[in-house]
Image 1 (cartoon, one colour):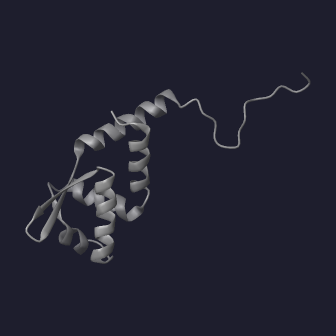
Image 2 (tube, one colour; image 1 turned 30 degrees about the vertical axis):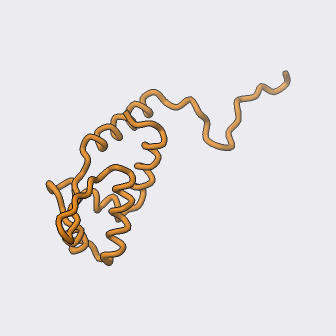
Length: 109
């Protein structure tokens, strides 16, 4: 089970379109090297590495070194836990009001 901080960290990581697309590419394969990922996107290798670092810090991907190469694979257990946490949170509701909305007031009391 993921705590609220982990869910927020993963959500922030996935909010970037490039990172989400990179995660999709990794999920479609057993594992991908950083170079193979970079070849699939019109962004530079350093930028791909930056996105992979954020996905790794969010614990969505696991990195494996082999010599000079890094390989990445989806942590399906974390992905499933994230989806389960979102589903449970949406079902239960948080009981919180959006910022700026106070409790209902009764007029004339």
